[in-house]
Length: 80
Image (tube, rainbow, N blue to C red):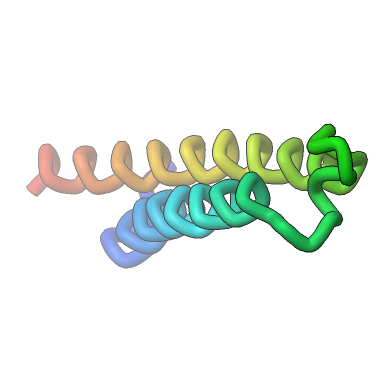
């Protein structure tokens, strides 16, 4: 399958965007002071674990999508 240049760049940008957003989210989750992520004793709550799992899955999917975009860009440069 051949990806167009705009689609390849979009996929790469989406992968990078995903990493930026979810790293920020995980940092904010870790620093949470509202009591949602950690209980009074400082132990992680279910909210923390669910959102950490979402972040990890998003890191993996963002990486996969970004790599597909990067491979598409490299293939287009080789063929040019």
